[in-house]
Amino acid sequence: MQYKLINWIRTAAWEGALIQDENGNQYLTHGIKSWSPAPHRKYEVVPNISNEADFMRRWKESHPYDNLVK
Image 1 (cartoon, helix red, strand yellow):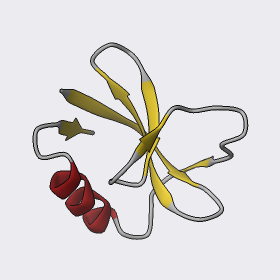
Image 2 (cartoon, rainbow, N blue to C red):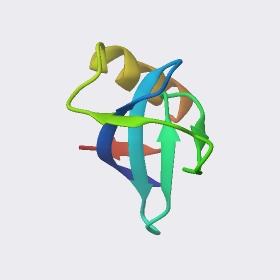
Image 3 (cartoon, one colour):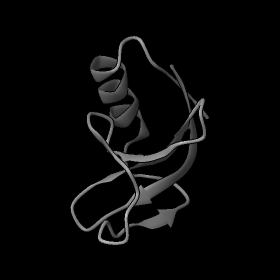
C-alpha cells in the first residue's frame, strides 16, 4: 500500500508523522506502529522532527511492502 506523509508530529513521548493511506484513512506513526487519530491521542504538528533519517529507516524495516511518500 502507498502512504502519503501529511505532517510531521510530536507527542509527549515520541516524534513521527501523520500519514494517509490510499483510501483516505489517516494514522499517527513513529515509523514502527501506527494508530488512528483520536481525541485522547495528543500530538502537535511540527515543521520537522529531530531525525528524519531514523524515522524513514524504521518505516522501511517495519513496512517493507508499503511505500511512504512526502
